[in-house]
Image (tube, rainbow, N blue to C red; front, side, top):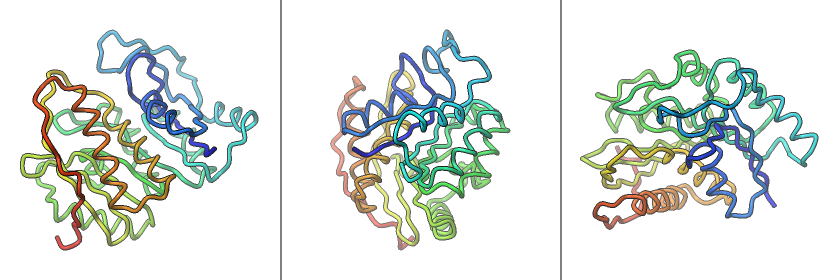
Length: 265
């Protein structure tokens, strides 16, 4: 069985972080190894969420002990997610240098909210993003990493930036939830190739937490399966949209999950 390592928040009662990754990947018969960056009773957006770990929880120590206990390899796909502080970030950086296949989800904010982590960690992500083989970021996060303002970041400029970044760093970039013509556009880019799928907004009564983490886990599965770029985008978008619709009590929209090339923009 294939190993996947997940270094994210461990949230006991919400489908986010490591829980989201285990939910998706555990059913697909991977050896799933979880390393917590923080341990919470529930998502931090809940006012009564309690942090259970001490401030000296060190993912690098957990990683080193896991390597002594289980047959982990340097080429195992490794997901990096929510990082609570700079001390944890520096520990994660050492893991990144040891693992060859990093899928970075720079969890740090969203459109309409802004940053919800401290600026030190957000800027740390800027320094390591080039080292990741794969990146999964929402529109706000990608914009922040590239010093762009979401309000005037055009699709044309976004695609150009993605291609330049991907070619320079030889990685694959997945950007989620780009506002586009009253819909949300998911984009997957590798080198000169970029594909996009637009899906309708889903009007949740309350904000849904964990969609990005679930999408990243689905992306990880398609990476391991070595699916083509277009197929990967279609698979991830279809599965996450279907999941979100099941958790929404409003009307269900039919969506054509066929990716279109964005190369001619």
